[in-house]
Image (cartoon, rainbow over all chains, first blue to last red; front, top):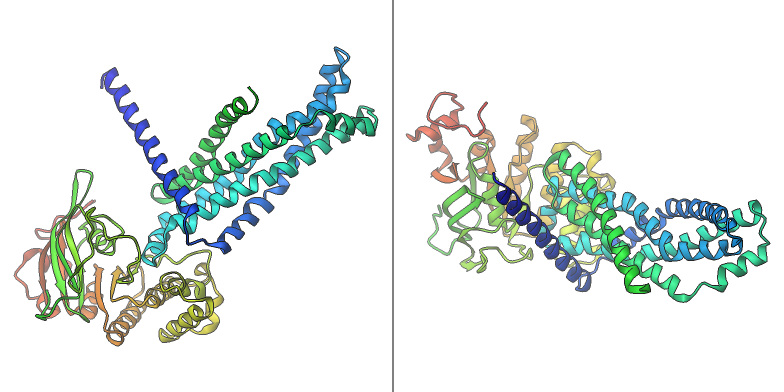
Length: 256
Length: 260
């Protein structure tokens, strides 16, 4: 095949995937908006995505906050700006690290799990069985996961932010010798509502992307164990990449 | 394929289906009277599963028409609209029970979602169907992974019956079962068909099962219906392909798909 052929085929394949994802997204979003609603499954997903992801997100943000305090202290000491450590920890966590790290961790945990579950259902004809029992798989399987993920990620990020800031506080006060009251003052004094809100909005968008990619790759998985494996890998990789790209776009929208 | 002069319960006309460039079904037509049972036999890859998935609405048709009681179900997009059906019950080859639900919840699923029954009524209907098929109430708490393949098929049958379908489609109901369990499943299927006056389309390559279940047997070969008739005519036919397949001869004109 000549060069033009390769470029043409790649372009067509790319557009085909984009088209398929767009149609899937449209169907998924409209399924979230229109009844019937499956509250029991939605609540189960809230527990699965929100509650069970809490330890992972909490640990990640705790240590990130601690490392951030140490590193910024090392850097700021060079130009006598140690006082900014608490502010830097708080701003970094609420604006960027909280939502991005939580998004990536949840992507690994929940995106993979959603893709594996739905692709197994696809391979074992359980999705076809849903249709023959007059149940729309988009409303029964996909909508509850997407809505739960959109709602849970901001909550996880909020808790993660607090834990991360506490991690920074622990290192700042007990290791670096900051005064406790001063550290807390420095944490809150420059923190504005937009810093927290932007992080929560980012988290909601990441939640949508994680669930969407998990559902999409699961729903369109190939046959057999290999199909399930590929669906899981693709879900995690694509949602992680989308999180990083979307993070940049949202940051520009909020702060530039 | 219907003896009755009244409107057939199911009429399939010129059903054609391809995947990419590969034609799977070519102008398949048949009709079935209420309460009759058609068994479609054919080798692996002959298009049997695709045929009943097209009839049930799981696959869109490339061409053709499907009618139930004279009413055309296929839309302009050649698809049977949505899943509301209730015209069709579908029992899958591997049962396709929902892993995350226990047996009782699996059986009650159709009643809850297709018939919009409340939780209690759906549960009672599920228990009734389970008892009809000889499954004890205490088994309702088990999960699909806890039970045997044969039992999973019985549960799948119960789940299919709860939506009160007019027509049931069976996708290789006895595949993977020992002869005794196969016979048991066949008997349960016959019991359901007769007691509820259901119309059934079964696809199988298990000849004993085909002979037990069918009022009529048809053979699908390379996507085309090449023969149909009463079960007692199957082994007496002059059609060399049918004769070879029914008797299980290796030598003959039958072209194996994916042959070794």
